[in-house]
Amino acid sequence: MTEEIEALEGGGKHGTAGLMLVTVSALIMAVAVTVLGYITQFAGDKIVLTDLTEFLGNLHPVVLHLPIGIFVLVLAMELTGLLSFDKWRPQTSFPMFVGVVSAVVATIFGCLLFRQGDRSLDEAIWHMWGSIAFTVVGTLAFLAKIWADHSGSKSPIYGILLVVTMGLLGWSAHGGGEMTHGDPFGPYISKVFGTGPEKPDTLPVVAKAPEDRLVYEEIIVPILHGKCYECHADADKNPSGKKKIKGKFVMTDMESLKKGGSSDEPGITPGDLENSYIHYAIHLPVDEDEHMPPEDKDQLGAHEIAIIDWWITSGAPVGTTLKENNPPAEILQGVAKLVPPEELLAKQAAAAEAAAKAQAAAEAKRAELGKAIDEVGKSFPNALRYVSQDSSDLTFTAVSMRKDFGDEGVEKLLPVGNAIVELEIGATSVTDSGVAHLASMPHLQRVKLNETAVTDAALDTISKLPELEYLNLVSTAVTDEGLKKLEGLSKLRKLYLWQSKATKEGADALKAKLPECEINLGLD
Image 1 (cartoon, rainbow, N blue to C red):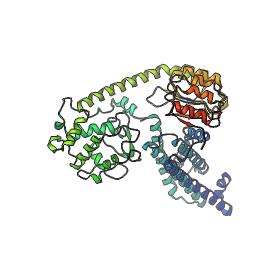
Image 2: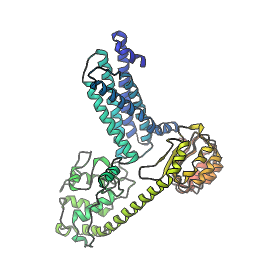
Image 3: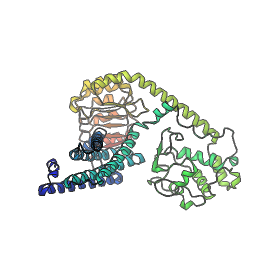
Image 4: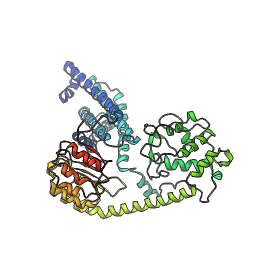
C-alpha cells in the first residue's frame, strides 16, 4: 500500500491504478468503522469479549495518541507551508496515511473498551461517535489530498476537510479526557480567578405545611433533585458534584425542562401530558432503555409520579403554592409523603460537608503517596495511575510488560499497595509467591491473573480481599477445591474461569454460596 501512495504523484497508468486501490481501501475502512460503531452501541449482550479483545480494548488509551500526534503534525506542516508562501511544500500524504490507519486501529480498540464499560453513558456514546466521525472525515481529507496531488490542482476541499478533521479531533479528545480525568480546566479557572461552583439553590429553612409549599420550587425541584439531577445537571447542582447531562437534557430550570434534550421532544409541555417527554419516560417499564430514572438508580415512587403528572396537567405552575392550585386530595397526601424541603436542605448540606472532607482526605492521601508513587514509577513507567482526577485510589497494569513482570514486580508495588484497587497482571510470570503479596493490598476490587502460573494456593490470599468484586482466573490451574476458598467473598460479582481446571459442578457450588456472582466458564 505504501508503494502505491509513493507512486501516486508520478501520474500515468500505474499512478492512477494505485490511486484507485488506495481510494477504495480507504473508503472500505471508513464504512467498516462506521458499521462497527453501530454494532458496538446496539448489539446489546450478543457480543461477548474474549481475553484478547479485552486486552486490545485496554490498549485504546495508549494507541489513541498516535493519530492525534500525526494529525497535529500534518496541520503544523501545512500551516508552515502556507506561511512560507509555497517556498516550502510539505509532503504530507504518507503521514496522513499512517494517521488514518492509526485512527482506525484506535477506534476499533476504543469500541472494544466501550463494550467493557457502562454503555448507557451518554458521554461514552458521544465520544465513540466523535472518534468515528474524526476517523471518517480524516480519511476523506487524506483522499482529497492524494487526488489533488495526483492531478496537480489546488482544490480547497482538502484544506476544509483537514480543518473539520481537527475540530472533530479536539471535540472527541476533550470528551474522552473529561470522562477519564474530569473537567481539565475547571480547577485551574477556580485557582486563577478565584471562582468555584455556584452554591445550589437554597431551600427554605422554615417548616411549612404541604399545602403552603411552592409547587415548583419546593415540591417539584426536590423530587427532580433527588431522582434526576445526578444524570441531568451541571456540577453546581448535581448531587455528585460533577457535570453529567445524559441525552443533552438539563433538568434544573423551567426553560430547559420545556426545551428537552437530544430527542427533540419537549421535556414538559404545560397542560399537555402526551407531549411531555418526562411523562412518557417515567411511565415506561423499568427495564426499557428510555425509562427514567435508569433501572440501576433510585426509582420514583407512585406518589411522586402522580405529583409530576398533576403538575404538568395543571400548566406547570411556578411561584404559586399548592393550595392556590386546588390539588385533589391524593396529591395533598402524596406531597405529605415527600421529604420536607428544609430537611432536604439539611441533608444536602451534610452531604456537601462529607464530600468536602472526602476530597480533603483524598488530597492528603495523594500528597502522602507522592514519593512512593515516584519510586514505583521508576521501575514501571506509566503503569501506575489514579482511578480518576479526584481519587486517591490507584490502578496498576502490566499489560506492556507481559512475561517480563514477575513475583519481584508485585513486591515492588508494596509501598503503594494500600492504595491499589485494580491490579492487572494477567499474562505475566506471576506465581503463587507473587500473589501472596496481595495480602498487603486490602482494598483491591479488581484483579486479573489470567494466563499466569497461579494455582489453588494463590486463592488463600485472594480469599482475604474483602472488597474484591472482579476476578479473572482464565487459563490458570485453579480447581474446584480452590473455588471453595472464595465462598467468603461477599462482594464478588464477576469471576472468569475459562480454560481453567474448574468444572461446572465446582462453579455451581460456589454460585450457591455467592448467588449474586456471575461465574463464567466459557461454556454455552
